[in-house]
Image (cartoon, rainbow, N blue to C red):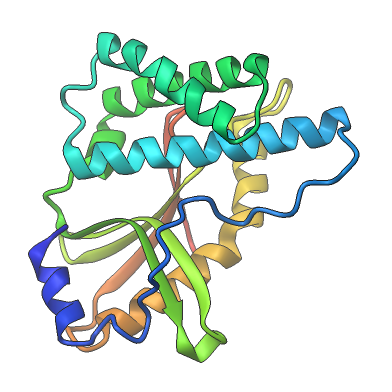
Length: 220
């Protein structure tokens, strides 16, 4: 973790917002008792997203340049085991691991993806867990944030992609509508943290590694 941000925490810039939670799984709802195919698929997608976020966090923390095709293939069995531990059957776990491998393959080969994974950015943080005391101590887990060229970036990783017959524009409109308010909340929390330093501009974005695409979301 960048020493600069660690120093901020020591000076209590972040202490009102810090959460002790290390749980990477977020926004989960209790499983329904009825195992319909929709529920099973939704649960599978949720857990695939959780393991994908864990993998991306690892790449940011420990480096991504050594993640070639062989390394990604070797990792498949680990992802399968992680998904099985979440309760997925073998079929969904294998499908999920392949999907995660595809996402990792694309993000490490994408220029914007490499930029997001680069841990040398100023105030580089991944899976940053914060609580805002002015919003009922609601927890915000920010997938990726850093400062680059004087701009604070707040980025949410998404494992989704356009469905069959859906155009890219339609897909981006749907995702933007679904996640704009979440990005706006993250932005407000980071504005409070950055306030003691200077008037830093904030940009928010969604990144879709399966496409791959960095989509800036205007929250003004």
